[in-house]
Structure formats: C-alpha cells, structure tokens
Image (cartoon, rainbow over all chains, first blue to last red; front, side, top):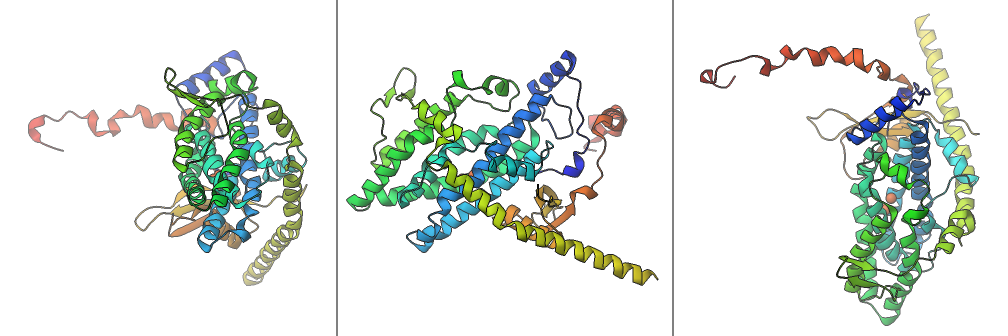
Length: 332
Length: 94
Ligand SMILES: [Fe+2]
Ligand SMILES: [Fe+2]
C-alpha cells in the first residue's frame, strides 16, 4: 500500500534508551508510524513476520475454498464463492504491499512461504470435506478473522492499519454468505442438517485456535500490545468470538461441540472447555493434515506461472527498447 | 531467486469532481498490466471511475529526516491563519 520508491531511505537507527523512549511516546500518543520513520529493528521484524504471515494466510486460504468452486450447488453459490475467493486474493495483495514497505520483497516472502520458514494460519491446514465446510468457513473462519482484524485497523503501523480497513470492509459479505449456506443446510433435509452439524463439529476447535496460543504461551504478545500492533490479547479475542458465535449456532439449531460451554452470569461471558493445544502446536509446526498439500499447491502455482511473469517482463523490455529506438530515429 | 516484477503506485478517482487518491500499489511488468491488476485489486466494488498507475521508482519523496526544517516554518507563521487577526464581533462574519 505504499511506494518502495519512497522507502529506499531505510537506515539503521542507533537504539539508545532515549530513542526507544521517544518511539514509545509516539506510540502512546496514538501517532501512526509510517514506512520512512525510524523504528526499532524488533518492531520492523515483528511487523514483517506478522503481516507476511497474514498475507500468506489470505493466499493459502484461497485453496480450501477454491476446492469447491466447480462443485458449488447453484450458480448463485458459485458466483458468491468465486467473488469471495477473489477477495481473499486481494487481501493477500494489500498485505504483501504493506509488508513490502518495511523493506522485504514480495519474492522473498514468497520463498519463505514455499520453504516453510513463514507460517500461515493454522485453520488452512485442515481439509474442506463437504459443501457444508464452505458454509462453516465463511461463518466461523471469516467470523474469527473479523474479530482479529477489526482492532488491527487501529494498529500503530500506518500501512498495515490502512490495509486492514480495506479488508474489513470486504469481510462482512464473506461471513454472511457462509452463514446463509449454514442456514439453508440447517433448514434442509435431515441429511443436510447433519452435514452442517458435522462441519461445525470438525471446524469449531480449529476456529478457536485461530486466535493463537493462550496469552501465557504467546511469545510476542506482550511487546506487541505495548507497541499497539495488537490491541487485545489472544484470549480476549477468543472470548469475544465465542460470545458472538454461540447465539448464532443456537439460531441455526446446531450444537457447538463443547459440553463445558455455558453462560457465566457472573463474568458476563460464556465459559468454554479446554482447547487441544498439542494439536495446535503440531499443526503450527507443519504437521497439519493438509500442510504439505497447501505448500505444494502454492509452489506449483508459483512455478507454473513463472513463464508468464518472465514473458511479461521480456515483452515490457522489448517495448521499451522499441520505443527508445523510435525516439532516437525521430531525433535524427 | 526470480526477477523482481516492478512496483506501481495506484491512484483512483472515486467519482467525477474528486481528485485521484493514492489507494495502494501493485506489481506488474508494464503499464498495461499494471492498470489491469489495479482494476482487479482496487475496484471490485465500484470504487472508482479512473485509474492512474505510476512507477514507484518515479516518485521523489521529501526526506523524512528533514521533516523538522522542511515543515516547521509553516507552523510558526501563525499570521497566515485568519484567527490571528482581531476583528470586532460588530463587523459581522468575515
Ligand atoms: Fe480475507
Ligand atoms: Fe474473508
């Protein structure tokens, strides 16, 4: 979302206590940090990692849903899913551009994804087994993404915040089309309702895991809060998501697969059961059921498209050379 | 590592009567592809009527380290603002 031409000035700053204190004062005063501003190296690195991971999640997230475009049950559903998947591609591009303002190239980020150095959201390591999964993804996964992304619109880093504002404007349609699919299935035949319940059963825990580890196990949490990269902790956002989603499941007549789930009058929140963190860490470390397929598919798309990128660059170079030659002849 | 595809800055005019506004950037081999990419990435919901793309490398920016000297004079010249001048209320709106 910003020009690389404008950020060539990236130079190291000496991180004296005075410099760090002045930077923190800017953050505390809710000033936005822009690409050219001096910033601590750790702030830059944290953002590159987080925005890159976010961008990869949007792009990899196109795969499980793209899997159902040709098999959508009606033209209406197909058009909506196609538009949603295209939006996710757009989200990835806004985010890559935001990360690039920090001095990392698109090609570098792509390579990091392909060789496993960069991660993407744990949720996209799961397969989409039935059409109901497309409904559940829109409802739960985009729902969780919205919870995460709304506070990011106020992130201290300007280009990231601006990218998130665009993304958030587009997310609402994603969640609504998913919920509509769930509604249709839940009100359909017993088999259709069972499909919807099965999708909820499989995707509920993975959706909760999207908010990341418990606050006590979150490696970057505290510093990110201090720098106002994050505004709420993982556990706070997860609780909000549960509180918002339980009534939506009730409306559908579906059961959230958690026997500990119940309203806590005192807290004013729903209590919910433990999350399988072993599974979470296994997935994050690359052991998810679809991790290898996702990376393989991204790599294949990149490699299969290489000739197009090369041809476009060669064509542009040829046109430039021709124009230069014509200008020379005209001058003579 | 593959060759880097150039970066373009995208400006969109939301509707007639407004200026083009910077909305973001795209990578593209040339200006034709840049316009197409900009349309797909930034105008999926009727965000504009006109697109400009400019090679990012063609933009010259002011030096952020010189922010102080560059913009300070504007702030200290308070007599450039209407509120600097005392005009009695009787005169009416001016
Ligand atoms: Fe998205
Ligand atoms: Fe989405």
